[in-house]
Image (cartoon, rainbow, N blue to C red; front, side, top):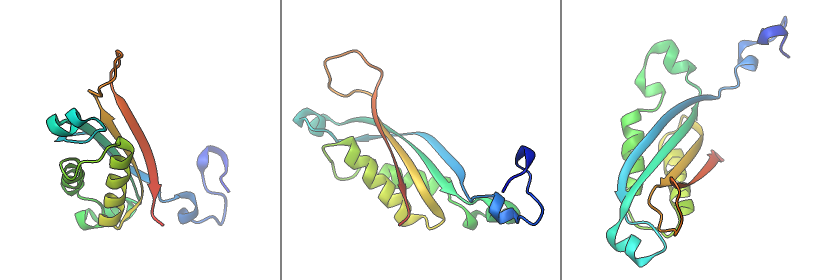
Length: 140
């Protein structure tokens, strides 16, 4: 249990206080892809933007200053870009799921991931800034 102002009560270990949920956020990864339900989207393609929140216990990396104990941002970005530029899918829901699965499968220290895929130029007859889907997936 926590006392006032989040301080540990007598006998409570630091591991109990820290739930191991730190967030590494990489926002606004942009890449060109051919995803969409319409033939024109598949043929012409468009720019997509992806943001990811990686839930990682950063304490080991912070204590040792070792990159191998956390996620390498450049590798995460390359992984997302590979999915964006890869095999086309109809739905951004599918794309978000594929990105989440690939990140969880590639980076063992990631406990859960939130992926937001934004499609700024969806072919919808209305005025809007963008359409996006945001999902959260946990390691099984």
